[in-house]
Image 1 (cartoon, one colour):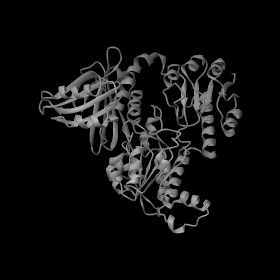
Image 2 (cartoon, one colour):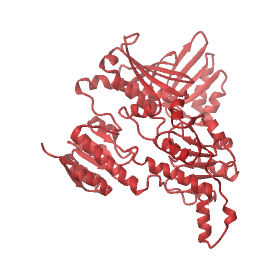
Image 3 (cartoon, one colour):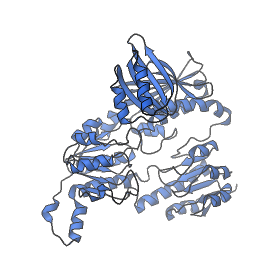
Length: 529
């Protein structure tokens, strides 16, 4: 049997190259710095490709990769890989989602300690030949309350280390159960309670429409006046203008940021001139140990897949068996859309996600459909990428049970129903492929409905009264927001209606507030599918 060939097209730590170089049956070529055309000219000869962030794996590269079976990214982000193109060719795309976790967690805690003890300011003073001992009185960390926003891999590591520092840890995470949090020594609370109670807050959440500008003027108003804020997660979660206002108004005592809405940060940013704000240039993963770790991990993962077919940390789904792929794919797309939809509804401290398949969906196989729904649900709440392979493990870490059910067919030839159950309630959504294979929603929260699950959606509950739809349409029109479809479900007993407006763009915060003020409207939110 001939050796498999692996190309490394970016700089990689020597330890990772050694793993590939010494693996039996693997021929390694190390050629960093190639252009797209150069990569296209050689990629057809390789079974595996290992990259970091520099190489752009475009559709053109994928098209030329006739033998390629796996792409390995040494790091978390895979924005430089065209995932759909790779998936269509049956190429597995892997990353190393936990390789940087310890390093990033440690950096967050280092920022916290530096901020609490005013270490950078004291160092700067000493270098200016000053001895200002009384000026830099700091604060102890022990026995204080640390609030963690996002309890993924990094957030859980921070919690573990904080316990060692004798801190009380509270946390907020929409997809972790309170039981699982308690096992980790974390008191699960809602966001407002975390803001009110925490002495220090550290962010470890992904940037999503739900978390963008999560820390705004309103949030800062709810924090303690001596609270300190740390963000080593993603720029954009903290509204930087609001942070500057809060610092100047002494609504909070200070902040330390490793990530920014725009990177590199502008030289004239007011954040850089505030004495009680510390800024570092996105150093979360910047340690020699982390760089070596992700290099070794991706080398081992690529070898394991090419030699033994073992898949770890894949960010896409390996090609389905040919005999069922064409029939199963529409149901997987429906399931992912349903999971994504219920994942954006009000948090309910989820304990179980149940996927019920009827008709052909159940006959073809509930497991891949259920895992797709779970991945869709989790993708809005995790900082690291999630897919049907990794989703069950991520759910297990958060105390979420995945239940798979097969039932006889009912009204539709085939349906998929996703139900999430938690301490604070239940959400349920039912879907089926449309005539052209598009994911269609046929039931939501007990309402019968028929809507397309794609793009931006305005989800509204209101009393079924004349004029409501006209008022909403007028407001959206005045804001330049186009409505492509409107579907309404009605509960005749209560007179409550649930409406889904397919719109062409997001609805701003101001517009949402205006919509909520319309008479007979009880709730409004936006979804992105």
